[in-house]
Length: 568
Image (cartoon, rainbow, N blue to C red; front, side):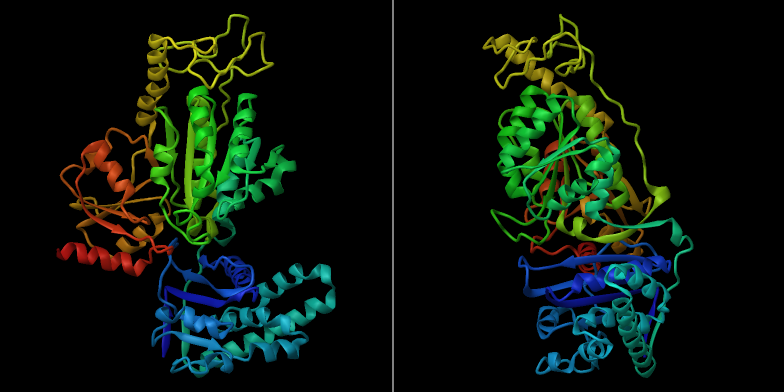
């Protein structure tokens, strides 16, 4: 008897080019329209064809945003999928696979699933992906009506015959799934959400892109680099609808300089890159610092050093963004923990960049960008767009000294003044200078805004027990896994803190963490944020839960690590 209540984890495994992602995309869209909460995460090798990739689709009664190692249902599209996922397959995993794919794999019980035979019977071997979705829906006991509608829309341009054959393939798979579920006593009892029509199904790239569009972004210049290319392609698709200039630069140096040029002219500009690409931008970041030109930099993190693991995940670029560039100047570092928060933080990023004439970094990662989840429309925050550009007069000085360190920002052609900027140290008018006194005042001016930025920084979001003596700190994409781990632990001695702004930090953070046991959860090898907390507030981190294999944290391993921490 296999009875799944409240949640189920379904994994599709196969080679690149076999349609693993196509199957998962179709399934999550059908499940969303049926009202279920879904969360899908993908891991794949850095090759166009071959290798071994997998996608996990979680169906849950509570909204979840995390990866689990447990596999309840495995749909193996080739023999390598069994080997690749072997350490996640347990005695309770229900394996659906072609008989030939399981030969010599040591899998005890499995359900022989003739996907290719059903596809051929429906009219073409290519329909095996459609069969696979039908099998899963049959096992879940979810009717084919929505999937048939999906197939009709998806293949309408290819004619009625193709649509009819796909619907037939789905029915073959569905009938097979129903039969095997009954024979193997597989029962799934998961209640759909109450408000399915309020939900949008998006991935992390779309969340970052929606926030960027909502912020009034008018220019992006980037050189493609996984996993950050998704923002470039998203904005390229939307450029005509929202008057966005999209520049695929020849390299990352050109990208950052083009963005600074656009910002100097008054555009709201962004670059999107990963760690290796950003390393080439550092001189440009220093240029932004000395010229006080606002720019937003999106870094989709992946493992390094160098090429590292191009298609895997990590949170290893906090220090890179924190210390990027030569000399001292202001910056802001943000890291969203959910898709709604990403939409909000991208708007905040552009607003902060404009108001404080500074560089704002937004850190995501491969796990975050390639995951798929439903988002409530009512949960999306809109921030009014305010421009902070003045009309200049003939006496205008681009770097005039002010009490708060922010000079009125003019742009060329708007007013009678000349907007002079210089990569050298400069005086108030923008002329280069080597006067030591002016140098000190300009340096202080560029750093002074950090005080206000810190006071404006949001305090970390707290979840779990109010009276907990142990605080578990997370940032960025680890928000979902920590929340679920603490929920399932149900311990009153633990509470979670999630930081969406990593620098500068609010002065009250030190008070929140004092006299507490502090555990920091990070996807990097050394504990970069833990080090930052120690540097800024003298916080003694009692334990660091770290992972830098290229995989995200699973709910199970976070629970185990927290349990272990309490026994030390």
